[in-house]
Length: 253
Length: 254
Ligand SMILES: Nc1ncnc2c1ncn2[C@@H]1O[C@H](COP(=O)(O)OP(=O)(O)OP(=O)(O)O)[C@@H](O)[C@H]1O
Ligand SMILES: [Mg+2]
Image 1 (tube, helix red, strand yellow):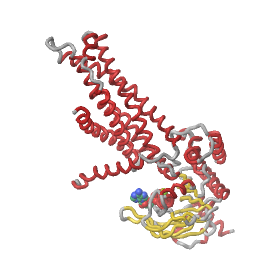
Image 2 (cartoon, each protein chain N blue to C red; image 1 turned 90 degrees about the vertical axis):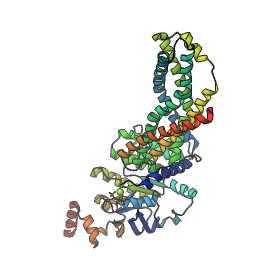
Image 3 (cartoon, protein in one colour; image 1 turned 60 degrees about the vertical axis):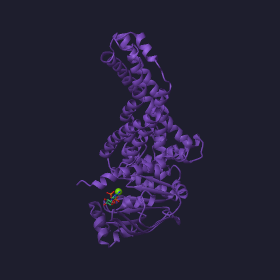
Image 4 (cartoon, protein in one colour; image 1 turned 45 degrees about the horizontal axis):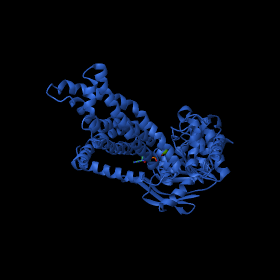
């Protein structure tokens, strides 16, 4: 469980996040949604410590991430996995080596066990056949899946995904969404996902935080979305034609 | 608009940031084995792969210095050791350490800056940080140590190739007799000069690797920023090499 309390972040006096409070629960896929430029990535970077907020707290199971010492932070980082918008695989390493990297760095397993664990993770994302390829030789969707495998190699407690399905076709997006959702429930992780993909919102939105221009605008679950009365949320969600259709169908039925 | 104060202070701020980064680089490795693996691969990438260009350039410069001195300086009333002696001193004292490092600043420096810069813009460095790896140390330390390990070897290759080049002008070009050249090369030899070359090259290797890594590591933006970092790293490390060459030469020779 990750709690954020009155988080505030600005760049050169320009406020990007303003007084955000939210709780990301474990065993659930927590979505952060909002328009492009609304501050989703900044919020996630504040969560994982790539940016430091000016005000507010980030609590990882009641451990304050912002004020904790360097050593404690390092230990906590072992429990975190992140999937970047661009996959961010190490391009000098093969797929298998990429997944093995966190294990090589931090685990005390033998070489045999590490290879086995990495292959297990690759198998989990259905990429065992590509283990000897290099990131430049596989497709974007495959890269994302390798990134997932790398992120879960050390069995993290907390998983962060910045737009895991941007730039992917709807079918592959669906595969990745389901994969993340399955892993989350399977290992009871706290998963935080940035997205503006409506299919993801409706598919895996166990808990949704909608931010607009750096403010928390709405929170709820995927089932609440249709009943929501927040004007900004409905504008944002129902800008998509597909959803308009679903909504009318639902109203009919 | 031109802002003189900002213009003056920017280099100082950059130097401060550079020192902070170096402090981060010099920390205890998380896992020695992983660093060692990187270290070996950097030695190959930065050192071994530079041997070719060092040999090529040194060979030609050695030959050309020899010919120039023969044509322009030597005359009947000069001792016959002049050509060999001068060629040797130029190669040992300046070319094989300073000028060769300037060339390496272009080859190796731009390579380091663009590699680390690309890792920055494609968020690979963020990925390392999130895992809890000290990305600065993991990426930069093996490069600095790798280049510093290999550079004395490159100096030796450079001296050897330069002298071979000089001999080729005698053997093939017939510019002078090989025995004259040999006599000059051995005339009044000071071993300390070779050590000076090694010492200087170690400093220069540190400058090349650390400065280029700094520019790469601090890239912000996209491919244009990476290109700029690569140019900046070559310019800055070249200037720093020239400056420190001045100081080191004073200290070591004076
Ligand atoms: N390092 C930075 N320095 C200054 N401003 C920044 C920085 N990073 C982000 N911003 C600003 O913060 C705002 C929010 O950016 P952010 O990247 O969080 O948007 P986003 O919601 O992730 O958008 P997208 O869906 O397009 O990824 C933007 O207006 C951006 O200009
Ligand atoms: Mg974003």
